[in-house]
Length: 185
Length: 307
Image 1 (cartoon, each protein chain N blue to C red):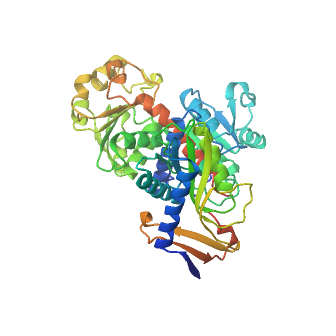
Image 2 (cartoon, each protein chain N blue to C red):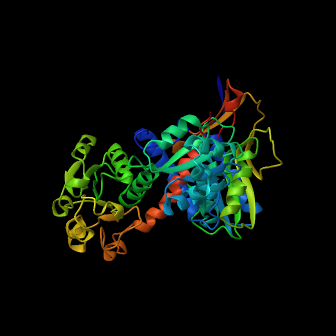
Image 3 (cartoon, rainbow over the protein chains, first blue to last red):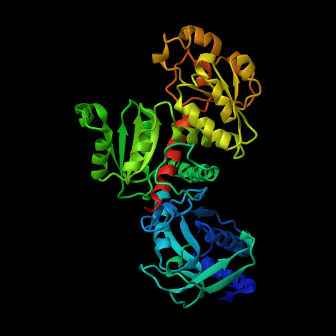
């Protein structure tokens, strides 16, 4: 069973608004960069950067971050997560980083991401942008920019599909059989 | 996905498993290029280096890899241990495990020792060289280096392994690994050091450098083990150099963009001249760096197997 929470247009509009909010909060794009969490967050970071560039006519550097090696559940997972590349081709020291992810859930991925970022350098600040906030936080973490808040139950999964992966843009809510699978990404 | 507790040899791995280890190693190579070269992935785990044969390079490489993954490392060196008092191999290993080892990295002069220990231990056993059998992480780091230099698709490459194939666990692991990945492998060396039955592994054999080096993309030089001298395998090191040593003239027979590899330690002036070892075609020092990334990858993937 699945239900569509956002379609292509909804995602487009949410990202446009978030791009404006990011520019407003940071008073422009000076010393700003976007870093997406592998994998969904990377595509979203690229889309946000394109929108920001369209609005401000200035290029914003984009990086990607792999958090597999910083997870706190390596001992309890059935299988090691795939290690992907971290590509941040610029110095993060003294930059204002907007960390981008698709779904904010327990907050543990974000904690891992912050640890990973701080091992790369010392940013001036870290802000968080997510397309979906589905609640159920287990750590004191809050997003600065949210595409859509969606109340969910623990037995559901939220799936963000994107064109970059060969699927049609959309956000789906699914009933999942096993609670263990929740928020695996 | 890696569904094994231990890494005993390349022979025991599928092509998918080899590729998974190599792909994962690329992520760890990134980590090694950062200012902070350590990740918390295996925090709280313990690695024991159990080396029954002298080794500086491999042991140090495993030690660095284990530390970069945040495991604690204990070097169990044999001359100072109870092994000299006659403790059995399995007792030693069980003792090491009881100390809390999650990974046991073993090197032993007898083939099959890692396989024996893997049966008796819950810890992950990683073969760091057993007799004349295998040295799997060396082959994986060689394959990783070749992919880095020649592109991911190594199926079309001509790869030559030169030297004492018969006694070389590096050669054996390399043959398994490179043929599994589809490369064409040729062995070059004196007839006394290349058993003809290796042809069954899908390789071709040459006894002269002039014949074997033509159009080669990758050249893996092996170390001539000095202890073999005077045992009838080859007349003398001078004679060996004259026939099978790698010189610029011989290297010019290979493709222009050939890369030269060596697992170390090198005998300069016997199997390879310094001009090549330190020259632009050599990737010998990059092999050392890649060894750390590949060993991190192996340990990380083995740690994910539930048991």
